[in-house]
Amino acid sequence: MDHVTTPLCASCGKTLTAEYCSHCGERKFDHHALSLTHFAEHAFEAFSHFDMAILRTLKTLVMAPGRLTADWALGCRKPYLPPVQFFLVMNLLFFITQSLNHWNTLTTNLDVHITGTAHKDLAREMVKERIAQRGIEYENYRAVFDAKAAIQAKSMVILMVPVFSLAVAALSFGMGRYAVEHLVFSLHYYSFFLLYLSVTSSVASVVLWGLRSAGIAPSDTAVDRVASSIMLVCLGGYLSLAIRAVYQNRLWVSVLKAGVLVGVSLGILYLYRFALFAVTFRST
Image 1 (spheres, helix red, strand yellow):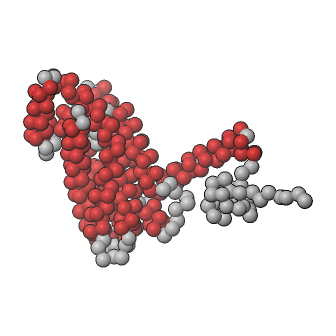
Image 2 (cartoon, rainbow, N blue to C red):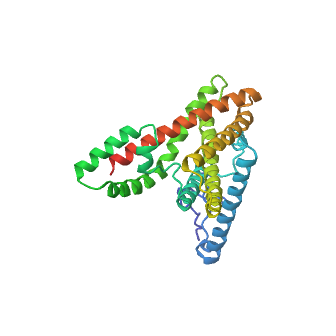
């Protein structure tokens, strides 16, 4: 008597009764999957789906503040990139544009640490002692520090997200929201923040190049003040709309909470820069 071999799932070993495994969801193996044609089809589908998802997520992030978080909380997640994945994409975009535009908003080189931060006096003394101990020139240590800081910054940016979510949770206390909702809201906010910095730094670089070509050279202090003022207004407005969309607060409550959160984000940015200095200093 001939025996018919029942196919087993390649992933979990369970008996397959349909095209997909009812236990783990793995698709039934077919030797066609080993062909170049199938591989090309699958690759094209994966890239096209990713492209559509990221474009839809970007459009929603910018045009409808808070909609990504609100949809996520309601279970509508398939049309968009997952929050963490989208944040990482924006993080990559930010550091690429920052390196091209030579801005150091989040990287913060050693010169800025010892001259333009709240911890500049402490940083100056620590660096002075370090180079004296090692008997090296400041320029040599600065080159090593800046290179290391650029690497550390890429992985440390995400640390701002959970801290910010604690402030969001505190302002939403008693509303019956889950902690993960505040975390997702923070991921989307910082995704917008990184996108904003990527775009504005690129635009500012072009504008400054045009001004300098025309013989107009604004000081770094003036540029920083203008850029900071515009950023605070834009982030405050964005947060107001996002809070209203996600937490259903009245407009004046949303504006008030946004003002508080903008202040919190500035404090977090300082703590991030100090932490970046401390971690980089320890490793150089």
